[in-house]
Length: 175
Figure 1 (cartoon, rainbow, N blue to C red):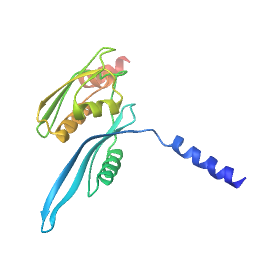
Figure 2 (cartoon, rainbow, N blue to C red):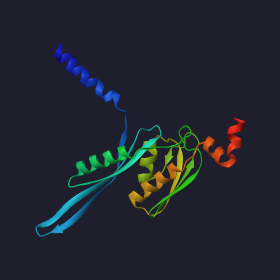
Figure 3 (cartoon, rainbow, N blue to C red):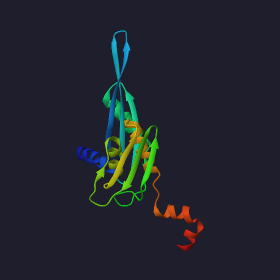
């Protein structure tokens, strides 16, 4: 009887935790030259999201690749941000900038798919966006592209927020 209880309790644990998708955008190998040769270290850029409007970015560094990915994933889960979506696309077009990278995001009609490259695609798919058009401008650096995409997504506003900004108290008085 005790064996059944133990195995039963282990089955419940994975269902309770929310399901997050983890995507490794880029792994970089760095070499330090020392007396005996080269010492390698690794960094991993990881994007995590629940595909329901939450996404986070993490950058982990370690002597081994799996450890760098684990650290990046932990950091990404700590930095989760909620994004305003309209169905499976974004409510309006937006431009995001970070470091040397710029990303232009435009809403798309159903059936278009995710038209984006590299780190931008990983972020958009992790958020749960299914239809979007994007254009990467400026730097091609993976980290800059991911940061610029995050900056663009954080600028998104819902219709109610836009009405409040434009009309102030009149919008709330009419409703």
